[in-house]
Structures are given as structure tokens and as C-alpha cells.
Image (cartoon, rainbow, N blue to C red; front, side, top):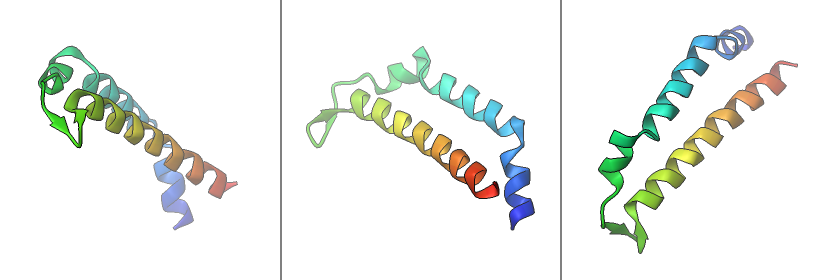
Length: 72
């Protein structure tokens, strides 16, 4: 299990993929899809899209930090 975590932790390709995915998700064509007048629980869908995307980014960073601290 420890070796598997280390391999995942040090694969820089995953971080490049996450960076490109995050950049793509906040780019104009994708944001335009969610820039509508719909509301979910009283919040605009655009606002929820940005908040959920931000939260996912934070969770990925948190998972990386937890794996890194666990390895030490």
C-alpha cells in the first residue's frame, strides 16, 4: 500500500492533468454553459458551478497533502 501511494504521489503527469482540467473548467466556453438564469436552492447555477469547482480543487490539494504527510 505504501509503495502504491508513493507512485501516485510522485506522478507529475497527474498534476499536469489536474491543472489543465482546472484551467479548462474556468475557460469561456465551459463557463458560458453554466451562465444561465437557472437557480438551484435559490442560488444561480453559475455561482454553484464555480463554488463546486473550487471545492473540488481544494479537495485534490488536500488529498495530495495528506498522502505526502503520511509518507513522511
